[in-house]
Amino acid sequence: MSTESSRLDRFISPSRRELWYRSYRRFTDQPMSIVGAVIVGGIITVAVLAPLVAPYPAHVGSYTDFANALEPPSLDHPLGTDSVGRDILTRVIFGYRLSLLLAATVLGIGVPVGVLLGLVAGYTGGWVDAAIMRATDTFLALPPLVLALAIASVFEPTLEIAIFAVASLWWTWYARLTRGLAASQRDEQYVQAAELAGASRTHIMLREILPNCLSPLLVKVTLDAGIVILTGASLSFIGLGVQPPRPGLGTMVANGTKFLPQQWWVSIFPGFAIFVLVLGFNMLGDGLRDMFDVEVEQ
Amino acid sequence: MVSIRQLLPRLSGMVISLLGLSVVVFTISRVLPGNPARMALGARASEEQVAELTAEMGLNEPLPVQYIEYMRGLLVGDLGQSLQTRNPVLEEILFKLPATLELITIATLFMVGIGVPLGVIAARNRGGLFDNATRVFAFSAVSVPSFFIGIVFQVIFGYYLDWFPITGRLSLEYSDSVARYTGFMLIDTLLQGAIGGHANAWAHLVLPALALSFGGMGQVIRITRSSMVDIEGKDFIEASRGYGMAGWLVAYKYSLKNAFIPTLTIIGLLYAWLLGGAFIIEIVFGWPGLAKYGVQSVLTTDVNALVGVTMTIGIVFVLTNFIVDLILDWIDPRIQLAGDNA
Image (cartoon, rainbow over all chains, first blue to last red; front, side, top):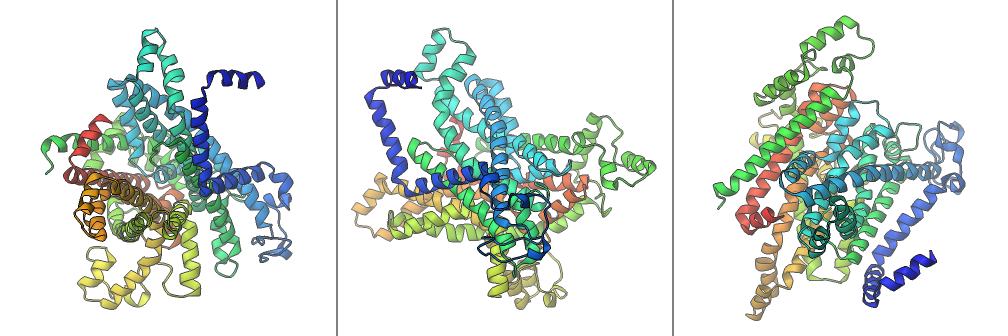
């Protein structure tokens, strides 16, 4: 690590460090960016440590305790209990795990696939570009939720299928974004220099062009995490995502609607939990956008 | 004016998108699952029943033949029979579509009618309290799950305040007397001079349309605000100010008109996007539209109905984008050039 930083020190000019400092200041100047970072960081920490921090880890599965069913929020159960007496706070914490898992998997598959296709399309141009982008446009011609619904419907509904359905669509946005970025870099002098020096196409795409596309991609990933989580929660809400007794946040909202309006906490708290997480990602993404000063369509 | 030279590439692009879409939907419906006939009939159906339905649906043919058959059906508007109700799918979809279009049209009106003014006022008071408040509101609106805001509206405005009905399109006392002409409740009630019914239809629309519009409204606010801010710094705005024109006149006559182009683009995209959102909202509010039909066909694995719904939504989506592109070409010919270079 220390050799790494000393190497960095040698190569990074003071003016570049000044630029980084300014970017950092642009981020911290916006109170909303900080709030977003705190929300996202906090929720990820809690979700990772779920078995340690959740008050009733046993309530995650098909545990029942009818004596305590539908208890309103109290000191013992800060968010109340559900229709079979499980602690809602515990289930929300574990629900965050599933939501974050969904986002990480979908983006973990979608981003590399889309970025690679976009790089090839943008750098190569010609009919390769046309073919890849037409395929992309086709997938973009349907609301993702509807396509995910169609895919999820032909299998047994589970979280894994929901992840697969959403992931099989999400690469399109990255293909389009990266293609635009790569095409704009293609005629830059550093790319021409690399070509003249005899660098391979793979080298130019991955080592020359890609690093120059990273900041818009990072912003897009952050903003997208929220949208993926919303899409997953919507699928679960319809009944095509996380299945009971697993604590999917969307599933919990759907199951709680039976008890509205009297036992509102069963539905409202898990719904609010989704809102807070997505809000956090959006604020953080917006802060990063200001920081890197890039334009990303959402 | 839009010329043929502008129209042709857009038109061919649309046709290619639709062809691609038909392949995707066909693949999802025929290649991915096991036997759609078996799925529709359920595990307890006998082998003969399954074989019969398989033959009836043409599933014994080779896939390319099936695809050609399916395309022929699409072109003449034959989407097959619903495996559940045995009615032609097209008929059922046309019956349900107006309810959904009415919902998303009113949602779009809310989105624009509330979002654009908020964005303009925020831009005029940049950095002020109102600007920051709308910023927080826009962020929240984009981040809130539509089913959650729908439920919150139902609880607050439906149960506790009792201002609006929470399910359906029309109350019982009106639903018998209103005949169906167009399927758009707001139009049908007016055609029959049923003012009470018309007001009732509006009351039923308010909550679902507002809940549906939230996500898009956040985006409209932000894009209106930022394009107004961009325009404010332009020379021609400075010039009109220099001529001594009143601030509000400059804002509305010059800034807003120019700032509206990005807003219009996103409104077109959002109108189509709302079709997806409607899937959730129709479930929450018991709205008898296409989305509810789609979800039902998903849950009963009615492949024909599902293909019909997905294709319909895809077609509306592609058509909307096509129309928005045309309007944009017409408003601002420079966009075409920029699009060619992108």
